[in-house]
Figure 1 (cartoon, rainbow over the protein chains, first blue to last red):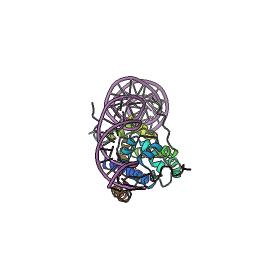
Figure 2 (figure 1 turned 45 degrees about the vertical axis):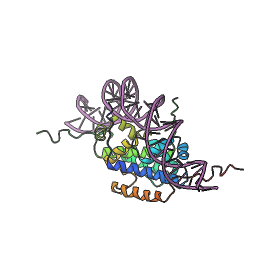
Figure 3 (figure 1 turned 135 degrees about the vertical axis):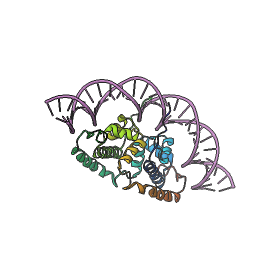
Figure 4 (figure 1 turned 120 degrees about the vertical axis):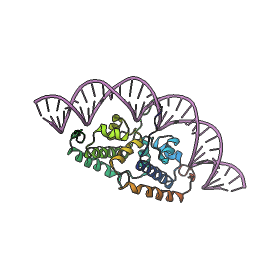
Length: 111
Length: 111
DNA sequence: CTGAAATGACCGATGTAGCGGTCTCAAAGA
DNA sequence: TCTTTGAGACCGCTACATCGGTCATTTCAG
């Protein structure tokens, strides 16, 4: 019952690699060892190694936490811009129907 | 031995919220239901719900995969810019020492 | 209006990620 | 040089995330 041979798109793999590299770079620029950073984030050193390697199966919260602690930008240049951006998306979401209706499932196969 | 009451920084929480909202918005703009997108990504609907809610403990690979499938930008405007950016960081990393040496652990507490 | 469908919430089983440990190797500092 | 220590790799245990259901509620299309 293994069957966890999940595949990831190229974009996902590269985005993960980028995040991992950014974390490693920021860590070294701040002269922190793996053990240092791991302790700061509150995770095991082995887990940090997986994050820096860009492994897909780490918890997103742990990876983001490491990035945030080092000042690696997450989606926006400045953390202070995150909240407004969330609000902006909420506004756009409010304009859309809350539940999406498939227009007609047999739009094409009803002949 | 539970004690997994992990805390996350404000930045992490907001970044997760932003990613989740962006995914939900993109999904609705493309008129896809939760079940649709989950099937496409190859995950359970319940997992997608956690991702859209911005839960910290989901696998980063699954969240990125959903975003990538919808065209939600991950760190760069265009997916094609990911690889060059990774290379750029690799170059910068090559200039730094491979192992970071704490200069002197008691830089501050040696008096 | 009305009912089919989408969403939100919840749950038990099970595969697995994180932990923390060890060992080896490399490299940086004295 | 030599030796300390950061980093890479691996491993077993355990808590927990994912899965895939169910049920209730909301909501849009006809």
